[in-house]
Image (cartoon, rainbow, N blue to C red; front, side, top):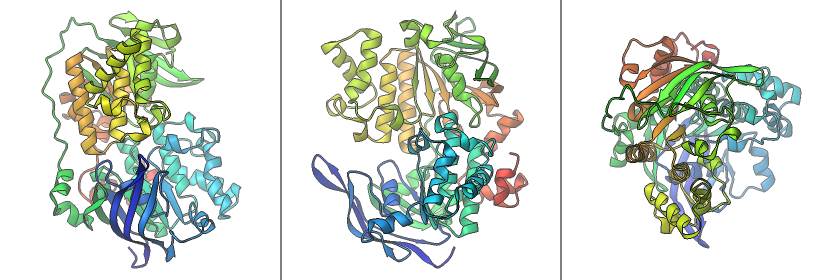
Length: 549
């Protein structure tokens, strides 16, 4: 870390507009960031992490403003700088990696065209050179087929792949400062290791400073030189990473350090003669002419949770698409309570559609921001149950109470007025509106901080016990698997490599791939990533993307 101060923030106060009033949401934060230094900003949802990270760029979201304080980047006062000066800095010397790549890319343009835009505008390198640099970065970040993947559109790659492409795009001009806002949220544990190693290598190689925003404490332990803990717009404490991990001073920090405590009571054994709610029988599937699933089978019983885990691109979400009828399988069949379902959802009747619902990973993109909560939940209520008028309203209010949100407060709100955890609860209520027997939970806690995520897990467990629901829980978070799963299905390259009861799956011996996943879960040790890479034969962090893990 250099002594050269790059970012200097003093007395930062930020206000947010609500009900035509300005309310202070960040209360006098100071921050110093040197070249080559990585600062971790941590805290629960609403702590002000992303707001402060954006302010370091001289930027605020719509409905927010910097009311007091100074923000200096390399001696330039960003609050006083002209719009043209800020434009020259953003993208070239200051870059940003957002949490939701799906919401950040333009769906109408190819990935590589969006990558080359900043280097071309800022005259860093011509398009042809920028394209080759993009391919080199794609390879470094272990994207599949790095020579060609950039020529796809955003919807043609997985969420984890798109997140890595956005990280590469931020690095395209080799900026002095990068704001990483939860950059590994969408990544599986093995890919996360490689991306973290590549980010560390970029920071070290180019003496780049970074602000790393995350709710994953084990990840920030690998990345940050210093950590600043935030709560409701205030600084709780700050220290170098090793001191913060070994000797936190404040009770709030200690509560964040605590391991997730949720451990639901065990469930009774499955009755052997009981028909599964969902049976996946030897299905294979393709995207066009490209095969992606190969002879996949598993059962999900009433009142049980089957966690489906594996790397990005392993086939987890594709299997879910087959179950819902969005991707008809080329071979095999899906059974609902022992009865075969049509492969195409268009051929399923309303009751068959009702039985299987889905909760999506990114509530920000899954909920229409211009439609009120009453309508988001009310539409499936009316479609599946036929309720209208007062009866529909009462059912929507009952669903809001079921997900622990006050109907009087939330019935007429819009999604942008809710926190991430509240929006995810609305996604749960929308799924429950159909009165299903089976729900697919697709990475539903990956974008949430640990405290909010635990609340969602507790809610899902309570609903399962009350309504006897069956869950397919798609996740790369093995801590979540330990908390909520009854059975585990491990997928790799479109195949099931291992499956069984959770307790058996977490006991050795494991399938080598399962062992790889388990060993890739970050630990609260600043040396964990370095030691792991060395154990796997990666002596240079920059070689991590090239290593076979």
